[in-house]
Image 1 (cartoon, rainbow, N blue to C red):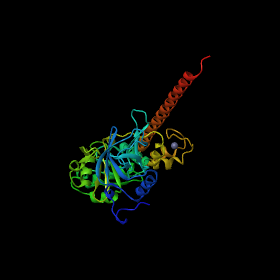
Image 2: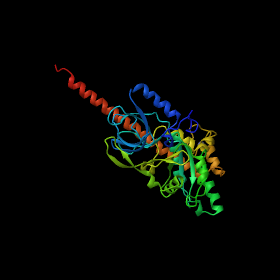
Image 3: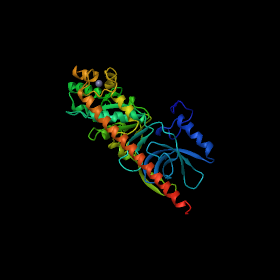
Image 4: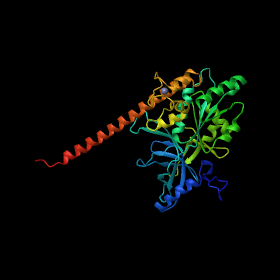
Length: 361
Ligand code: ZN
């Protein structure tokens, strides 16, 4: 039910940042709750206690109240109240998608790396041993976010025609249900075709050396750093240089590039379904296993092992599935343990309080 800027009567200054009719409706709810002037803004970078946002009037740095939920992240749409002297951050509009990873430390169990992402591009470079396990990991993360995944094989100028065919087939075997594209950012080959496949807010994921920055620059069509740095007011008349991690791209696209995306693990709870999606070929075969709880290790009548024996499915696929599954189970268990510990702590505190208030005999 979203409408592009061209279809609407008037253009909105935030159209290049992904503003659409759906967001307008979400904002309208807040006009009812908050008297006084409101504007929408998109988070282009987060800081401790502050956010850099793009407003209809330009870039701005605003304070982020600690109590605000969810904690705003790059890509979020927020509501700014303009009634006071400084713009006030009032709310975060409900997210359409959220790219999350398991939190390494801290109280929360997952960290949202980017919000409202429409396309996740998994970037992979040709290699003697292609990092297909990494591709499968990133794809699972992408399915989990709610965004549409796409795989891009970069640096194809390094390959002969026959090598390219082999490399593409290899990547495709790990990328079921996601389109695979070949590009050479250095030569500009395949970039326009890829651009045609992208929609909305785009995130590039991939191991280091995969060529993410070169691809980002090719999509921007100009020097990224030159456009990423802008001057922003902070509502107190001060100006500061802001390095945006969310940039409009030609063709109505928006590119998100945050350092957090450079090393990502899987999310705990909820990622199981996304794993099944990434390994749909194994899951389809497993339906025919004799035992419903078949682990595909040595059970008689295992359809997955039979398919591997017949060369229909690569042994590597099953191993990679198991590895990610174990990791996901570990994270889910750790999340449960942490929640249990937090619950116990809360109860202990309540009991201590009750004891302190109990009248002494
Ligand atoms: Zn089996």
